[in-house]
Amino acid sequence: MKRVALYLRVSTDEQTIENQRRELQAVADRHSWNVVAALTDEGISGAKGRDKRPGFDLLCRGVTRKEFDMVAAWSVDRLGRSLQDLVAFLAELHAKGIGLYLHQQGLDTSTPAGTAMFQMMGVFAQYERSIIVERVKSGIARARSQGKRLGRPRLSASQEHRIRDLLATDTGVIKTARIVGCGVSAVQRIKAEPA
Image 1 (tube, rainbow, N blue to C red):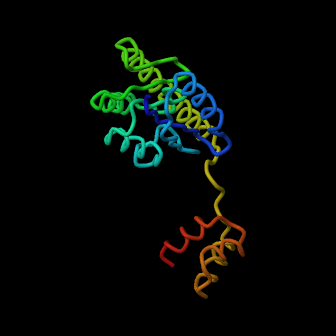
Image 2 (image 1 turned 120 degrees about the vertical axis):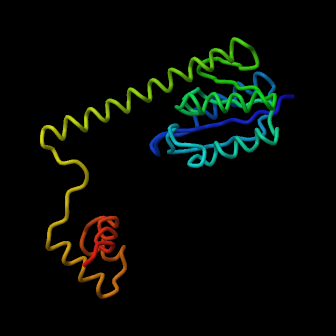
Image 3 (image 1 turned 180 degrees about the vertical axis):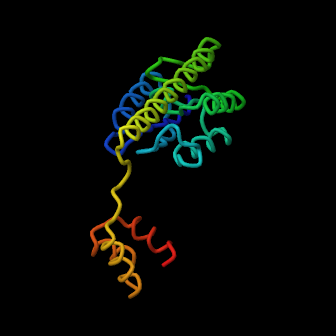
């Protein structure tokens, strides 16, 4: 019986991994796979590296130790957005003799056709990510050219003065932010600035 690790990831806190878990468990049941691990990253972008995705890091460690015969994920973009990272992950799987199943693509990399398809999907995932990044940059540039201010509004001079006064009396950063009615990061910024 194949030992399978499920990898489940969603990009935002508003999304849930439960649909992915249910579908992949159903596939495992149909194939008589033994699900030995379900590793998750919730609210973490696929563009983040392994060091910022604890579930993916545990998955990679399990692959290194050959704890699984197969890794099953909902889709290629759940694994990552960088072609280089995807290809490196696939190479690591193949070096250990571990297969990869991608549900949305119906892909099984234990076949040569599956391996080629995986690499092509990685190219498209990276392309899609590049398009999103370019759209965001373009939108920011357009907003700036129209004179729009981006980011949080600056604090008034009286708010900054009040923050400095509170900090001078050893009021904590969080309490100061609550009293003034601003964000903690604004208080930290003012605390770090020379008086």
